[in-house]
Length: 372
Ligand code: MRU
Image (cartoon, rainbow, N blue to C red; front, top):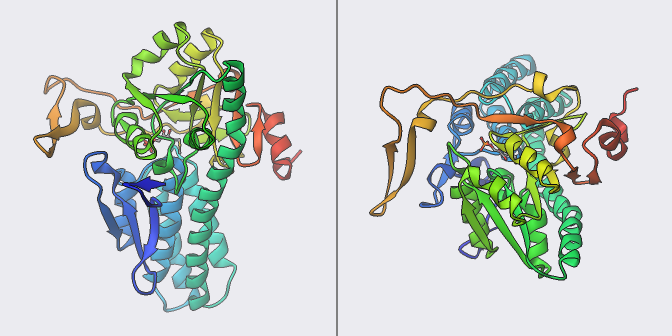
């Protein structure tokens, strides 16, 4: 997508022989646009853990490139030593963030692809190719999510005789959370490009404010009308017919349709249900967990440091500053995600189409996953 009119992806290979991994360092957005080079596996692990990159799709793509860096720097004494270094790198990356399933998915996909070829040079070129494929697929799947999801917005626009369609989103499931396009935002960008009259309510998304800082920034760069709201405003807007639909992303969705997403998503789904507003979740298939059945019981919820709740970052006199919000001694809890049960989800928007949030719906789109 565009930054000051120039096209960017969130992660790419650069340098003379395309061996350097570059990312947009999201910690400083929307105030400063910075590109960072990830030079070793530790850099990649830090970038994921400390959220220089974040969002399920991008975490997966970064892990894919991380495994390529691991292959470039692995022990070359033998194929076995090489594979052992790679497996250790994979474990290090997987340990960074537990909720987004794309992370383990990308590491395991790389390990399987690399193990399947003989010889260290072939293994390295396979790691590079697989990293690029994961990233390209992520962008392509998000673009397709846009093509499917736009029909839902078109339908509401028709029903409202072209009056503005108000869409509420939570956190950042935009292009910054993927390689390009985004999941929840892909139908929004597609609708905007088709000239549909839309407006987006952007939840600020405490504690790290991915909505206020990232979603608002990227919608602004594309010229999409939007308004930032505090996290607790959504229910009020829904009661007053100021929201036509909700679209969020997800970090892990069970095969039964339970959705883990940024903390606070569940409350939006409850309010949407109480007000008869459709609640859609957009995801590429890399975000399905094909093993898990019960999201509330089984999906691991990341518990992050209390400083993200106690402090807040902003711009003052042109400088990015961090200030204390709470009494210094008050403890804080920082559950990063929650689970919205499938019964509250109107539908899932995937790269293959839209389905109900149920095992039958999901497996109808992905019949190859039907093991019974
Ligand atoms: O903690 P984050 O910023 O990585 O969380 C991101 C979200 O919760 C997004 O909504 C989610 O990843 C879905 S879109 C990839």
